[in-house]
Length: 268
Image 1 (cartoon, rainbow, N blue to C red):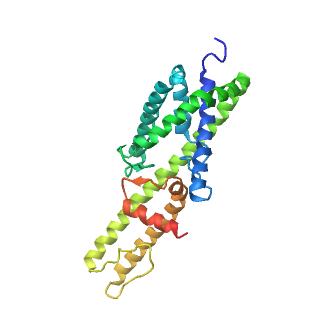
Image 2 (spheres, rainbow, N blue to C red):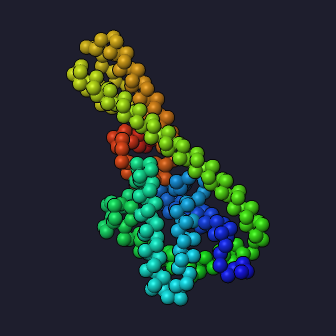
Image 3 (spheres, rainbow, N blue to C red):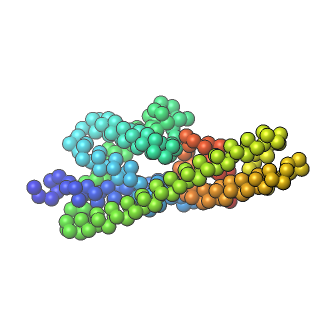
């Protein structure tokens, strides 16, 4: 089979990166118009949104036979991209205990992962891609010799997996720190109840009330608050980019602490 009749695996991988990059550009442009500043809207640090790459390649492969029937192409596009967005949102939620996007306040949403309005919009985008954009992109890929396509694939796969490892490691570390912060906050609440003072409120503040507290208890409180503050600053640095990238992110756990860190970042 000659090149061009059907996309081979190497061409699919390169198209994945091309569409992942174009999707990232779209997200960044949308955020720039809305917020009037640059925001890296990707899950990864690099300029790529994998869900766009996967989605477009899937649509191009599965729905290209329907490109002559616009209505059928549109309906199937809506179904495919909705399923992909729901599965991606569900998987990220279960792995990281966060909803990275949340459509809960939108009408006709499903678990907050997808909603009718955006599914319909993605359907229109897919029709445009399948009918006009993908044929042009694929012609450009076919223009490249196969050895260059494979070389680019290898380089980009290594780069993205490295980025993925760094990003996931950072998120897991944030979750570990949040667990420790929760434990410290719980301990401070317990001490507060014991001594009849609400010292656990505004833990990141600097007000300390020690009049009726023993020296030993005072030292323990100071040590706990210091650890909490150190973890908060460290977590805030690690969370800064992701909070900006996913402003609608909804945490499943540690909601109060994460809101506190978000407020801390807003003041910076």
